[in-house]
Image (cartoon, rainbow, N blue to C red; front, side, top):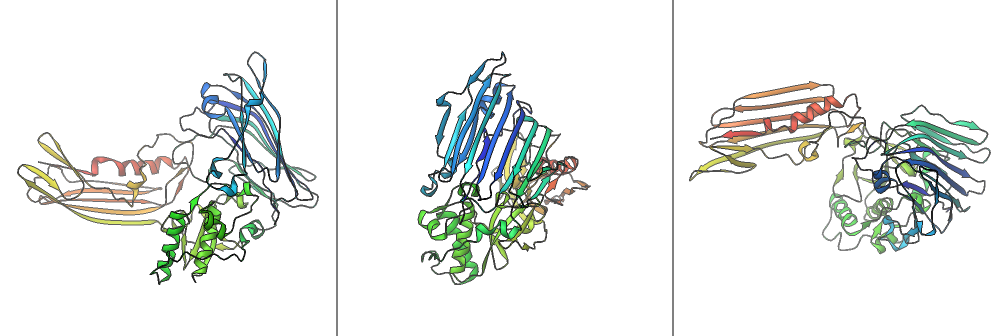
Length: 524
C-alpha cells in the first residue's frame, strides 16, 4: 500500500483564551501542495508575520513546529530570518533548528521514527517581522489521494492574506468545499488557488464548537468518492487477534462481551495521538496494537471492532464527520467508533456513545462511505429526590445536599444532578460573543426535590420563574407547604449549536438555571 504524509504545520501551540486578538499579524502565508504523476506529493510553506506584543513571541508564535516522517519525506528549510524595526536582519543560527520526537509518538516505539523540527525565531521584539519558508518533498510511495483540511483563522493573529495552492496532474479531478466563506478557487490549468484575505483573529471564546463552525475552513481531496477516501481504513490483514481469555471470562451475552472488550481497550491499551497523516494513512493491525499496548484513536477503534468480531459479535467500523464539512477525508474525521447491536462505542471511553445526542453536529458513515442514519434526540434527564432535614440537640442535619449555618438561620442547597446541565459547569458566560456557542447536547431535564422539614421551620416563600424563547425554556419553582418544600427545576435546550445572534437567548436560560435563587432554602 502506498504511504505518504504531508508535513503538518503548527504555529506555536497554545491558543490561550486571554490572548489579544491582534498580538501579531500574518502578512501573508502560502501553502502549496503538488501531486506528481508518480504519486509523490510535495509541500511548500512560506509566511511573513509581524509581532506586536511580547506575548506574541513569548507564548504564541516564537517557535514554528514542523512534524514529518523522514522514512518517506525530506525537510529543507529555505529561509528563516527576523527583520527588526530598524531594518536590521537577523538570520536564524544553526542552533535555532532542533529535531525532537513529537509528543504524540512518545509512548509508541513503532512511531519513534517521526520527527518534529522546532524552529526558534531569534531577535524577536515588538514590531519585528519573521520570514520563514520550507518544503517537504515526498516519495512516490505516497498516499493514493491528496487530502487537505485547513482551518484558516488563528487565535492571537489577524491574517492579511492566506493562500492555498494545489497542483495536480492533468486529468486529475478534485473535490473541495469551504465552510463559512464564499471564497472559491482561481483555476489555471491544473492549478487551484484559494485566497483568503483580511481574516480577523479567532476569538477564542469558551465553549466554541469543536468543528470550529463559523470560521473559514478548506477541505480538499483527490479521492473519487468517500469510499475511496476511507479505503486505507479498510485494510485488514488475516493476523490472529483474539480477546485475552481473562477479559471474557464469565461473559456470556453480547452486552457483557461488548462491555468487557471496550473496558479492555480503554483501560489496558494506551492512546498515542499520532495523526493519520503522519503515518501516510497506514494503520497498524490489531495484533500490533495489542502487543504494544498502545494505538492511535483510529487503530484502537479498528482493533476493537476486530476483537468484537472475533468474539462472535457483528460489529461495524464507523466514523463521524463534522456536519458542516462537506468534502470529507481521513484528515477531518472527528471520531472513530464501532457499532454493535445497533449501539455505538468508542475505544477511549467506557460506555455507549450516544450518537443521537450529536446528530445535529455530526454525520456518521461506515467505511464503505454509506450514511449511518441517526435521529437527533435530546438527553432526557429526570430525577426525583427526597431529602430529610431534622433537628437534634439544637443542630440541623440533612440526608443529601449542603446545609450551612448563617447566624440564626440555616441555608440548605439542593444537590446537583450529576447527569444534567449542572455537570456542564457553564457558569462563566461572557455578555458578548463572537464564536458560535456549543453545549454538550440538546437536553430535556426535570429535577424535583422534595425537602421534608420534620418540624424545622421554613423561611423561603413560594416563587417561580418561567422563561421561554427560541433557544429553549427554563421553569423553576419553590413551593412551601409548611411541612415540606418542593423545588422543581426544568430546562429544555433544543439544539447543540447556537450562533452569536442566538447566544443571548441560550445564555439567559443557562444563567437562570445556574442562579442560586431556586437552589437554596432558608430555614430557622
